[in-house]
Length: 433
Image 1 (cartoon, rainbow, N blue to C red):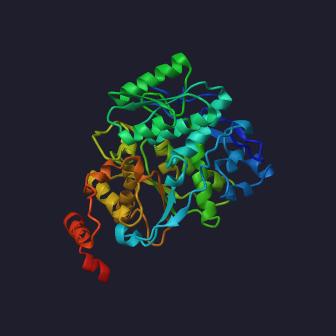
Image 2 (tube, helix red, strand yellow):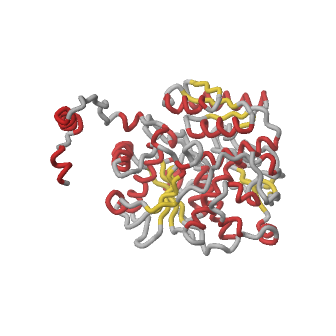
Image 3 (spheres, rainbow, N blue to C red):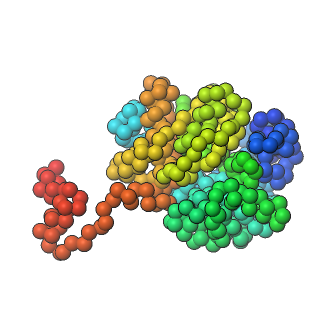
């Protein structure tokens, strides 16, 4: 566990992002009870006294890129510094993407590379805060429904906290992901369907008192609302890394869109604090178009859309959440969906240029290209893409197009022959290039 010099948080309570109902701070982890109805639910979010933040610690802490997410402790929901867990999450690089014009038909693009976190994904920011808040609530068992990144991160932070962690997954989850979760000590169990795992998680929470790092409602609401605030630190860091400026556009691959909402909330707080003139437009990149449908039809809720097997498993949820609608509408942004084959092709193209990311994360690059084609990104605008996870989380996608590694004899003739036969590569041409 780590502590911070700033021992105060300025939490004032919880608020529904849809109906505006306010609630006292507490373990309300399953959405707003005031506006829930069959088949629909709205998220709650943590509220803060921003005026008190200005008067208290000031705002310099937002520019500290050397520390973990807890540099932003005044704007995070964990009160006791002794409960603040860290594996070094946060402080990820913001790097120019050099092949932007070549691959995406975009003059420039910045990548906020969340694959550099402790368990190689953006989920570490969320789980650091969610599990820490669980300690504050007296949690005894951490539980989550996940196909990979969330489960691995929850397992890692639970291990750090000394708490058992149970992950409900599905039978088709990649074996690499299951190993990753189990390696941190998680008790991983697979069910036949996403609906089954959510039902079982709900019973464990309601009957056994387990602590969830994501909602357990039907339909799902995404991440634990306290943990979702961990994603705000992405916005704070981007602002600091751009020299106290916000980009024009933020783009991220989404499922339940907790990450996009957290980033939106972070920029909205920077705007309320007078540090940026406006909130960047947020573009949600989906695989199956839940938010895109709601936007196209002007809905105030989310409706199911057809889903199917996909390489982008992490963004293949059966629905999205009100978090996503709030982020895109609150920022005058939009949502778009991308197809399967372009993701597969883009993953290989990126890897051959030094960027190997999980297929779900690669969907964001395809979304950037599509947004540029549709004119959703204007000439000269600054764009930041949130890269969520490492390609090593599920190498099976790219392995389909890779040859078996050949064995060669220790002589040049053998090497030249194998390079030509397996890799279609001419050693003489290589030497002269």
